[in-house]
Image (cartoon, rainbow, N blue to C red):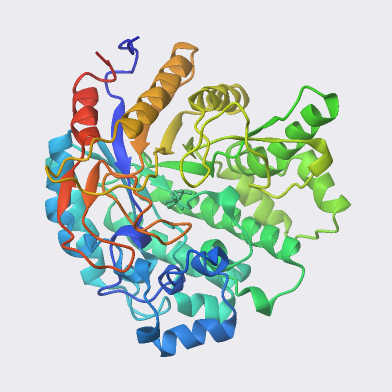
Length: 475
Ligand code: BG6
């Protein structure tokens, strides 16, 4: 039962992190992610669905809360040691995000920070020295809070301009150091709230319209970034990125099957159809009409999107679910558990074959190179006396998903990178807990920021190291 050596020679084996979950807030502006307090019992607050008053209160009385993402895992100070450890693991690529609030720490309309740029420059130089390919996300759901308060985030065209300005500064500065760019993380998870578009929920009505307006503005922003980017360096490659939420029908009842098809259109394909094929598809236009969603857009914007389609498709893949026509919500994530699958303690089902199916569907539809931007397994773990966590469940999970990718490659799908989430245990995006651990490396830090922050490689660290050495061959 082994993986044959069918991965291309220059396949990029790597890991992924995000600024909001790793760096900590030192030397940068406060972001919407920072204000998500530790409160796993009320995940809406953890996810940042705060009212204007709640935001102001958090800004004025920070000592009354513990903000896990403001702390991160201290990567801003430990990055040199951390990158050395990752080099030991043998990674060929490193996906990380740049924090907008670090490039503009005094407000997104003020001066660019040389300290912020130098921080990332040093990371990029370390990677270059070690022949590790960077994959850079420009926006991983961490808008500077002043832009949420002043403009309601991506609802405003002004924020598109500010984002493009920020992206341009970064692309110019790192024009010889980066090839792969992901302008926004998981665009299909855009929802009304602070976390992904910086909209303060209680200041708006007609949430559906607002969501798709924000998405449209992100489409414009990505197209502009590509338009400017290829002038800065024609070899830049830009990726659309989706969180994999493809669903399967609960039964083979025709109604379930066609409902699953329609749901996949609006929660997945819509985004990639616009960003990779260049136009709003007919089914989406009809959906908007049927649901009274009137997006403000003009011909120039649509032409811009059509002219600057993106180059590859990046997917984060964790689990997969099923839907029934009689519970016909089109909301992303509103689905049922697949009774044939096991799940982790957070109810995330494990389905490597789902990744294979998805890759076949994406390749058939777009014929653009694919990468796994994130894939990993969250678990509660404690450091044993010998300091090596025996995380066989994680090894199994990742191994099975890598086999699924190999199978897709054997079917003719072009895949160029695999980034495991995550190299080191980090603050969870969805629940702001530390105890949901994904790392190949254990980080001694608890839900409230206590601990030594010492890093300890787990068994999976050595397993991944050996897998990379053999370019995907498993003994
Ligand atoms: C992805 C995000 O959706 O899921 C990551 O891009 C996140 O930022 C990952 O960490 C896992 O989610 P969570 O909530 O378990 O951290």
